[in-house]
Image 1 (tube, rainbow, N blue to C red):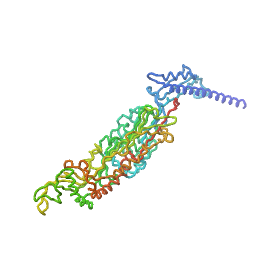
Image 2: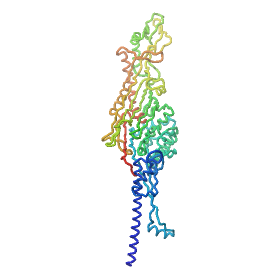
Image 3: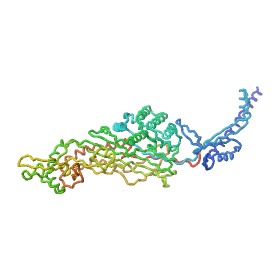
Image 4: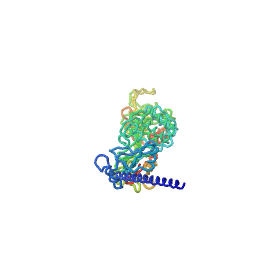
Length: 634
């Protein structure tokens, strides 16, 4: 019994020692592969073209670490990709050396356990066993920076939902989502790296070739379908993916990814491992569709919570809210949308405003005297107070309050807010400590109130074509009168003496002619890519934009204008102080009360839905810096 026990102990000791020998041989071989891969990547080894060859660098390192020059060694160039299962794999590509894979093997004496196993299986006993090891090392990656513009549309209201649905309808889509549907999209984040990789696979492009991906024309439907697949992998709700599929079925027009994202040539995969708000992507797709179709979208006025009017919209340039690249060589730029919006409201019938008609009639006599002096019209009185000789025709003033429906137009031109990172200055970024400087200019808005010949006139030409809105027509006529009989007049000439009109000069709100430096450092230092960005407001004085807009909407004025032909108003006419006070005191409050409810629907209802935030626009930054040395990655 003792002999049997001793024999078993010797057998187990033999197996342990023999297995340990193989384990140590395998560890030694793995160390050789690791060091060879690291050295080849560290020195920038290539597999094609000029430069240090990866195979030679790997062979030298392996030999130095004890690998026989006669033993097999294969060095391959390529790159890493992260699959939808979030696992990294090496993809061989001789023209890319972002990562280098080294495979080595060595022949050793077969273990006792292996021989016993072969005997039991009835096979021949191999005297040797081939051990294999591989390692993948990535070369020091370039620093990666990411810029974004933060939308404050985090809670979608019923008004904003109605505007989004109206925009969809304007570009020919039939899908209409509920408030909860839009809120679900606003609450969802999409990983850019997973999205671009999945899109490359779907479009049969090389993974990692972002410039080809950005420039290839595809369809909005394809972009949304791929987004659905990525979101399903990441566990998005069925409601969100279902709503995206509905949008995809409607939005079938051409588009390129480069119209939505700004990815520079220095962008590597690590620079895209970040999330974007899904709603921002959908907003941009809708805006691109509107621009490509050259649509002047008409939005129901009730979508803004108003009555009696119309809203027209034109997208000049869609938003581009994410940019990534190498801060050493790439200029990164993000911007909000550039749009023109026209709100046309119906004034109440002027003839129905109490006291206004009498106030206009009271103007007739003093205004006639002023016009004679200023315009040399040779008027001999008014229709109501004709003083011509008996039966002799004479030229008189005929002042008339417009009795038809009058529309007042509010045109808003919003320029894009921008933030950019220039590669030229040496201090545009630092890695220790982390800091990043962008050049930023907030959105500027131009507003004009009055009359446009047509919605298309404003949407195509902007605020420069605004005209004064006539409310009182100062015409002329030729009349005669016999004693107490009513006067007999010819054909009235409208606006021969000009008129009284509403105007607000085009005004630039909250813009600055120069970009301002925005420094992200200290407590606001840029975070690692993949984390929540560090945010700073685009400008410390953005509140003045909304305050200025409010003052402008409340700053309506009535003024007299010179005639221009017989169809409108020309330049402002300087009248005697106080002459128009009676009409002003009645009419100005009516118009101001009509415009005052417009501020919130315009700023928070229409502009914010388009990704334009005049009050709280913020710039976000991320910065990832490599260690400077090659690292084992697989």
